[in-house]
Image (tube, rainbow over all chains, first blue to last red):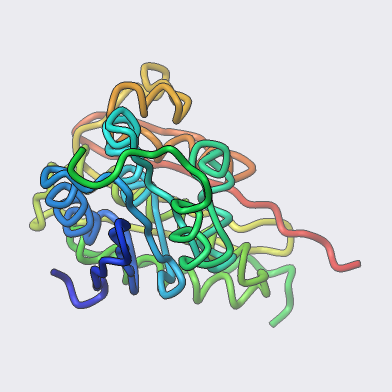
Length: 125
Length: 146
């Protein structure tokens, strides 16, 4: 994985959290794609991306979210996002991703949203 | 620095995604010179990143022996960024910017870059001579001080 980008994974209850740090661009997006693919292939469909330490995103990074969301939702899950700094959030908003993805103020809020009366499928369903 | 004087700055880098961070840093330095806000500077860097990533992937096929040139020209009216390559050109009229919702249905991971450039910049022009020189010219108007 390039030094300019790091992913830490954490399991909180039934939710898999990806904590991203650094730049998510065409150079680093393949690492995120591989991490997300591994979890989705293993049956994790309740996914949260913590963007609080993500300092940059380009369309290559947004493309990773885009390419998995349909499959994850078909399986009854979701990819939810939390903690984006304003410089990163504006890129999501410009392309209308804020209307496609649920974006929360914090990753904790995003994690909690899965427990807030949702009828989403649990991991491995 | 008298603002009426046009100034030009040029960066040449090998055609590799590894160098996108260097290109963004170059653009950020230009943005500081013209006192863009952090948010505006970040978006300018995104637009140039997208254009450069397209060159690296589509014009040069990730051939790091080739060069991507980013030229920034600033005056008191605007910031113009030209991204220049000598790779495979394309007909800009054939490139359609699809809605992200359509791309999601297609489970695509690409196809957002040009749309992002067009939303960020005030003017986008292509000058394509396949195999010789391709230039993507992007202009951002400078806001007048209140």
